Length: 195
Image 1: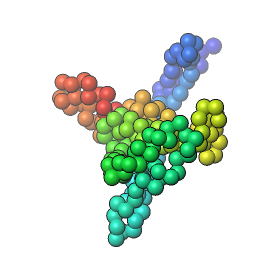
Image 2 (image 1 turned 60 degrees about the vertical axis):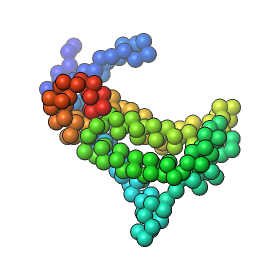
Image 3 (image 1 turned 90 degrees about the vertical axis):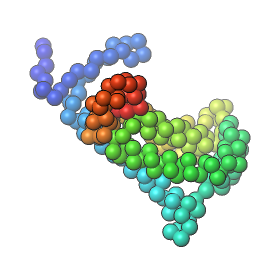
Image 4 (image 1 turned 120 degrees about the horizontal axis):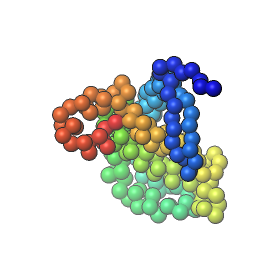
């Protein structure tokens, strides 16, 4: 028996792990959820960046530094401990990359401009935050502060990859307009940055 669908309802058919999958979804609710998730992730990055700018008080902007965390907070048992100590030696370079990276990523996610690139950069930053949280190696089960293997940084990383895959910058964002320009039409590779 065929099911009756509304015009905004569609069926996704794909292959996942070698098996055919199919399910119905509402285009309207998917669009709202994608824009909502995009805005929430934008706020996460903007808030983090602004928090770091204001951390030293308004009299000392940019007083925040990653050096204390990189040199002291990453567990000795973390398999990447040496990498983070090395980053700590270059805190003067790492600090503006983190602060301004978070602000620019947040703004790009907010307005939906160069969304895929911004989401990728945000996911890379979340990957570093996640690996810094490891309290041990594989033999220890990759423990993190509140459990094993996964924390909020990992969830944010996956969420950013998903939003990039959906092309969330096109929904109520600047990328939808930019993709209609002659420059993007003449250079289709730019669609990998936009979306």
